[in-house]
Each structure stands twice: as structure tokens, then as C-alpha cells.
Image (cartoon, rainbow, N blue to C red):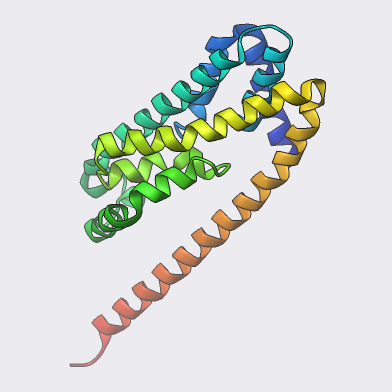
Length: 215
């Protein structure tokens, strides 16, 4: 199955869910969107905005529920990272374990850039789904995390809901535009992961070479 068909299937699930459950459906999908499950928030909120334009529920309620769902989902992913730290360090499968130095570097990075990264990532497709986990792993202060998560989620949810409300039945065309944004962000994420793995492999090779060097 290619990426387009996966995206289309998720879009259909999102619209059916909102159509059946209304505001509760919006809350659940937006929660999943920020809790490590890549449900496309673009589809959810565009369709929710369109539904509001048809009188299904007030636009203000759509925005409030969508933002609250994102906040709660982010808190769940943060909590998983925060309390799953020991698993990654000691008790998890060997392939999943993370070196303590890696977590230390993550903590320093979030201490310096964490607030900005959380804020900006909330407005990036795909990235917004996963940013809370490393924030929890790095033990970013919870109050600051929630504040910047809320500040980042609100304009994203607001813009999509208002757009869906304004364009009405044309919301499906805008949904297709966002699909290409997703692909671009995914390409950048894959490139970054490949660069990280290559750098890690080179570092490991130097360490092994040093260990076998004659003394």
C-alpha cells in the first residue's frame, strides 16, 4: 500500500468518526494526533470546520474541543516518555535501550531549545504527533511543556477550523493540498534520521577501531 492510499484511508476514518460522534469524535482524534498516533489533524479540523458551517455545532466549540484534545494527547505522550525513561535505559529490549549520555544530551537540548521546539513543532504536520515523547524523556518542566503546547496547538486548530468553515464543501480540495505538506515533512524527517544513524555508525566504528588499536 502506498503513502497516498494510507493517507486517504486515514482521512476517511477521520471524517466518518467525526460524522458519527461529533464533538467527542473531534476530541478523540485530536488526542490521538498528539499521542503518537498519526491521525491527520488537517482532515479532522477541516471537516469539523465544514460541519460547523452546516450548523452541526458552534465553531467556537470545534476549536475548543480540538485544542483540548491536542493538549491531553500531548500530556499522555509526555507522561509515557517521562515514566518510560527507566525502560529505555535499563529494562527495555536491547535494541530499544538508549545510552544515558543520549538522554543527557536530550535534556541539555530541551533545556536550551525545548520551549521553542515544542511551540514550533505543534504547527508542523507529522512532527507534532511525536514531539511530546522526547520532551518527557528529557524531563522538560511539565508546566512549561503544557503552556507551550497550548500556545502551539491553538493557532493550528484555529486556522484549520476557520478554513474549513470558510470554504464549505471545498474543504476536500484543501485536504489534498495538505497531503503534499505531509510528504515534505516526512522526507525531511527520514533524511534527518538517516543522517543521525550514519553519524552514530561512524562514531561506533571509531570506538571499535580505538579499542583494537595497538598500545
